[in-house]
Image (cartoon, rainbow, N blue to C red; front, side, top):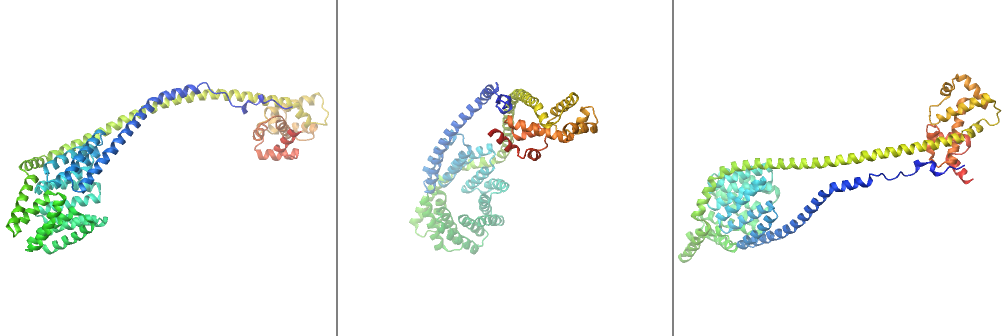
Amino acid sequence: MKMSKSLYPIRTKYEPLPLRGSWRGLLFLTLLPLLCACSQVIQQRSADETKKAVADSLIEHSYALFDSCQFQEAILVGQEALKAYQAIDDSASQSDCYSHMTFCHQRLGDVESGIEQTLKGLHLDSLRNDRARMGSDYNNLAALYITAQNPKQALPFILKAIQMEESLEVPEKLSIRYGMACEIYTKLDSTAKALQYIQRAYALDSAAKDTVKMARRLSQQGDALTAAQQYEKAESSYKQANLLLEAKHSLASLCINHKQLGNLYLKMNRTADARSHLAKSADMARHMNNRYVLQQTLKTLSSIESNDHQALAYLRESYDLSDSVYSEKTSQMMGSQAARFETLQKEQTIREQQYKLERQTIWMLLGLLLATFFLILAIILIYILRARSKSYQSSVHLLRKQYDESISQLLHKNMDAASEEVTEGHVMDDETDILLTRLNQIILSKLSDTSLNSEMLAEEMYMSKRNLNRRVKEITNIDTASYIREFRIQAARRMLSETSLPIAEICMNCGFDSPSYFSRAFKSATDMSPSVYRKTIKNE
């Protein structure tokens, strides 16, 4: 007789738990504010990216104007880019704008405006403790002081820049700082230190295979050698620099190199060569609108020009440029800035400490917020999981109980049939029937126990093992161990034919150690494997 599917509830899915809908809603309400905040952040970032793209295009255009020597126009476009970066609070890009406009003002000879721009950039970078950009700011200040013929006040700035770059270990920037230090020490007549720094710079640029920078270092080395009165070596350095710069079409550096080579030839009393190189430098400076270099070159040309009319023209042009390059107001400003340098260092140290403290505070607050959020989320999840676990355990307990009852009903129903098949052909009196019934009940109650043996049965029957074996053999012609095995096989046959339980589960329910042993024992008794037996019964 086949059993209905309702007898095997373990094979069916349990009903949805009542908390399933509510915990999802609770989790959604918890995460909703975070999702809204994330959406606002994404929208703001999208708007900022659009504004940043506009600002980037402006600063790129300003760079292009600088490269074409349109410095005044480059400043105007750079100011527009600066406003755009300020609108999105991009302080790093603001600093880049200030640095770029510093170079523009320097090329125009406006040292005062250049210093103002550099100090603004330095203020932003110090607030962010951006040591790389601060190193560039100090280098720019040193360059502006050199432009104003004030190397003594330029020295502390370049040494500060070198200190920062050495701590960051960025070779391409460090070589620039060493080159600037060489220029300053050259003007301070410390040629030994100048040559020492320029050798370091040239080694870094040579390792990087940067031809333009190598040429600039050779030109700076020529300046130091000229100051050391090693004119022939200086001439060689300048000429090597000229070849490299002409090959790379580096007009700005080539202009300065021609000026320096012309000044060297004056010291060597080679006036014609000096005039030729200085004239080239003046033409390049006019083309690039580099007032600083042009003013210096014209002043020198006026002193060596044999034509009085031309010399006067050079001198007038030089005086006109001198007023725009360097004024008394600029001199006073630079002096006050140099006096403030030590104060600036102290303020910078304080700002660095404040910046670190602010960062630590922000990270602590963020960590606290995240910890609070995850704590609340964990509490909610624990509550949900505990509720689901209790509901699940109740469902499993109910299903297991139903399952055990169905198996027990099946085995009890077929106990008599299994006993009749084992004792078939034997006549039994009342005493024998009682003994066999008791024996079957004990085996049935412990059917899934793989350790069930003759000794355990004898104890349960309150008989000795020997006496039990004798009585079982009289009734069935087999010993107790064989009777237990036959009982297990008959129970398995009933389960295979009347249930849809997996074979592995039937194996465990009938007390076999493993599926392989069960398969061998079943095949030995029936000449068929469990799976084949089930198919055969179903086909019948």
